[in-house]
Image 1 (cartoon, one colour):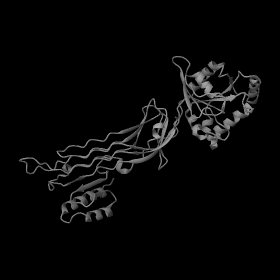
Image 2 (tube, one colour):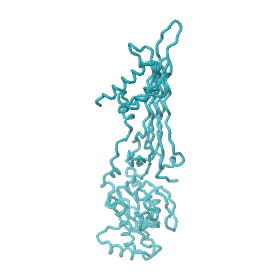
Image 3 (tube, rainbow, N blue to C red):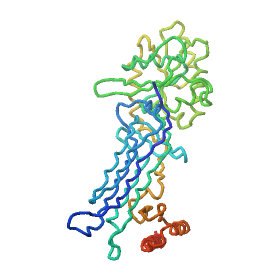
Image 4 (cartoon, rainbow, N blue to C red):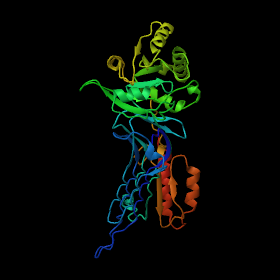
Length: 409
């Protein structure tokens, strides 16, 4: 089953909490704090992988979760970091943020990858909060929350050549003769419902990747027929091979059919219509096609037309050689668009303690304390909730907040 679109939600792992612990050992009456740090949460990364041809794995699994970091432990033991989650997709996959509509990445080559959700940083244990006047801190940091993101994946096949034309023009037959691909072939329109890929080998050192695009009809740019579902796959190609049926079942004029398809390509994308094109007249093995070929050449003066019979195999070698020449003239297709920078929340952009949001907790607080820039009012409400007899911690929170508030950054 060919799937080229999917929407999923990714959850990075939260950071583990720091540990509140004190050293307890025989003959060591005042061992001091020894709470370890929490582990970092796992991140979610999308990677273009060889051998993956479709987004089918995304259809039945809408939530992808990385492992959270383990909490810190006593004896200064650091919590284990959560494992990163890798989502494997085909080369040619574009990743969009559903909330903003921004293009996050265009994975055009195998091995390219992008982090779509960053794991939270682990909190510090109470061993980090020892000072000359605070020898037994009874609080630690909570782990940072991880990023959650909804993304849309769109696959655009990456091929050297795209076969376009009306339904039943013989595109699948041509692909089967030029390569080892075995698309469905029948004597009725819309036999091909999904794009097919094949590799044509001219010799041991020359290979061409060819994509058979399902048949287009008038109005495809407006969504008729298979419409926009597969027109976008042609955007990746370096060369268009436009196939015309010289003996259509409905008796339409081949020249008129050619202009209709050209009009749909222009309406969909002028950049796509400007791609170099080779015009192929198919089904020369049928009676009366010689006259139809002469009429087509008269209707399209100055246009080079390659006459072939995909079924009989005539004219295929000269066509393949010309395709190779034209492909080598063209540079690699440009990316769909410049990927936008990753839009991470400020608290996830850095590992610096002065820019991260610090969340402290302890046995004598009624709820976590948020110490973050620009939250003076929230801090005042939180300080009121601290037990009245614990003034040392209240002073500590205020000092931390004043430091953040006065930070010129």
